[in-house]
Amino acid sequence: MANDDQFKKVISHAKEYGYVFQSSEIYDGLSAVYDYAQNGVELKKNIRDYWWKAMVQMNENIVGLDAAIFMHPTTWKASGHVDAFSDPLIDNKDSKKRYRADVLVEDYCLKIEAKIEKEVKKAEKRFGEAFNKEEFLSTNGRVVGYQEKIDSILKRLGQSLENEDLADVKALIEELEIACPVAGSRNWTDVKQFNLMFGTKLGASAESAMDLYLRPETAQGIFVNFLNVQKTGRLKIPFGIAQTGKAFRNEIVARQFIFRMREFEQMEMQFFIKPGTQKKWFEHWKETRMKWHLSLGMGADNYRFHDHEKLAHYADAATDIEFKFPFGFKELEGIHSRTDFDLKQHEEFSGKKLQYFDQEDKESYTPYVLETSIGLDRMFLAVFSNALVEEELEDGKTRTVLRLPAVLAPVKAAIFPLLAKDGLPEVAKQIVEDLKWDFNVAYEEKDTVGRRYRRQDANGTPFCITVDHDTLEDNSVTIRHRDTMEQKRVKIEDLKDIIKAEVDVKHWLQRMK
Ligand code: ATP
Image (cartoon, rainbow, N blue to C red):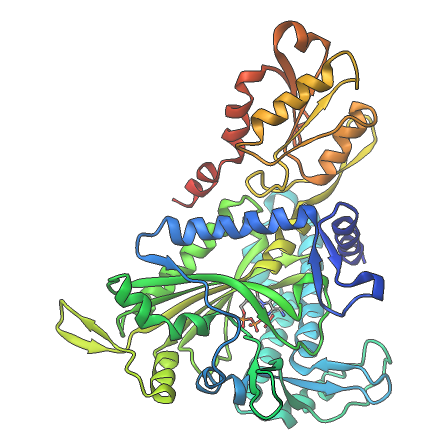
């Protein structure tokens, strides 16, 4: 399948260009754990900064926090994670492979969705310019039938999970005749719940050691600090607390590269609001977060909302922003209206009041919470997989180019001397010295300039700057643009402004307006 090939290319390109490595590779790796290499760490940091800037710096009523990974174990009783943070798992008795029962069903639906896409492509070809996708999706008998099937399967799955009717989840898998992808058989065990939290111990002696969990989400660090931050920051509702950091989940089926990891990073924001205003704020954050995604220019067609049928125990509304990964549309970010569930639970378990006194209305209340939660690693995968393209050139050759949004690219410019002699390296190195105060830049002198261009294209570097013999006379250099491959002669002193105009966060974030 073409998409499988694309995904394989993404994984090998990420390794070859120093973006993502398997953890502990020399020991054959650790399943679903990855390390970010020299370029990956920069791309990840740039994504994190882009989020932080949009969330914290651009909103005067949102502040940051960096809570510890270890938290008092009662936190996880209060939050419901000890009792309910589990996934339904099912084993195939022949292959002995373990699956998430809900994912098996969802994957089945994805296959039906692929059939819809096929019909759309066929119709597009047939009708040409006159093709109206919306109309086609709502009137074509076959497509409508497929969509109804998907809807009814997902509805039943949602209801069975909500009612904890695991026998019905198994029945659904059997009725749909879903087979194990490895064994090909339908010899399934019953569906069971499996808690995803990692346990560890705090303390030196066996008797006094305390059982702890590695946090499975960063949100609870925000809830338990809610009053401290509100009081010391003299914050008035509505206000938000944002944080980025590691989270850990013992995922049953951890595959799809960095899409589902056991150790990953989240970027979360909890927005505290007056009860009764949650609908308005839910819409506000849906729209705002989508604008943030679109500001990166990765194509509006690659995103969609998926409203939840099955709501978590704490939520009164929830939606996912899904992205079109190489393996189909999948959750990238969650937006949840969490009511006062978390603060009330922490009040109950800690015995401490976690209320807000509204000066204007002269009343105390437990705020409601609107949450936006995005996986940094998933965002990395979205950006990276979307950027990697094989491009046909006019001369019939192809080039591999990583069209990363320039604001996120690890290296903003690579500086080359045309030849590694005649004083050209010295001038190129001086340009590096001058530019490195403002941008992450690289110096390269090996191979022909053509090969250096190709390497930087594949690395995602937006600009290449070449110093040649004319530079020594007129202080000008050739600047080449990654996406257009256009080359221009410019003055060395103008380089900083030219690069800044394309990579500056402000230039990109302003598109959110
Ligand atoms: P999924 O249904 O894919 O397991 P989730 O609904 O459990 O995700 P949330 O608990 O809402 O996810 O977490 C918020 C975000 O954190 C997700 O949208 C995703 O981007 C990210 N995330 C969650 N689990 C993982 C993981 N195992 N690896 C990488 N990112 C993750």
